[in-house]
Length: 243
Image 1 (cartoon, rainbow, N blue to C red):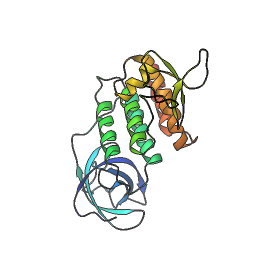
Image 2 (cartoon, rainbow, N blue to C red; image 1 turned 90 degrees about the vertical axis):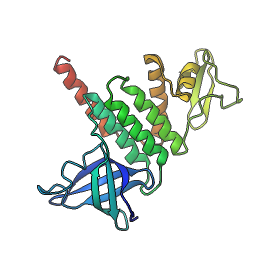
Image 3 (cartoon, one colour; image 1 turned 120 degrees about the vertical axis):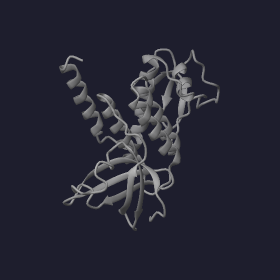
Image 4 (cartoon, rainbow, N blue to C red; image 1 turned 135 degrees about the horizontal axis):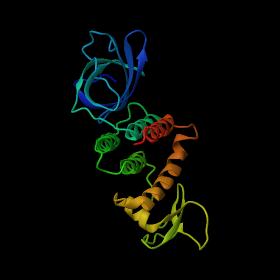
């Protein structure tokens, strides 16, 4: 697992370890997810103090074998990202998905790119908050080989039409919905918008959320995500402040 030169990474997660060290989960393009110990990183005189912050880009190098490497180099890998309000919980949600679904030392360049792109979008307050989440969920499923069929029906292979309504059968695909039918119903317009990664309007984003969350649940299981509790807490705090 030893590396030979500094590589770009994201600090996906960190927690204290022993007296002054940190346990890190890093996401890299070439090596995938890496677990590493940053010895002495919390010490007052550590050269890495303030560098290994969650959700931030870094350049890192490490040595060692087994589950945990030893960090030997770290410096900032770009301008710090700032997440306001509930966007912080949204960013942590992306990290939870990476930790739940990505195995260590499994190269994942598409996940690396999607994660970084989503974080940058969340740090830019101009776009709707939920769009980066939906696009990351879709791209993550694609990268892991669990991608959704979105532009054709699963039963006949006919193209999905924007005016149609479909019942989405997980791990199979969309089939035309009977009038008054039940199940995971989604409009053809939403399926095509998600395929083209051009979600527009609250209705499309809401349908895409229900579909992607149902698909992800198959792989992350029923254990609650901590970022959702953080989101609700931040949302309550915003309302209480009168914002």
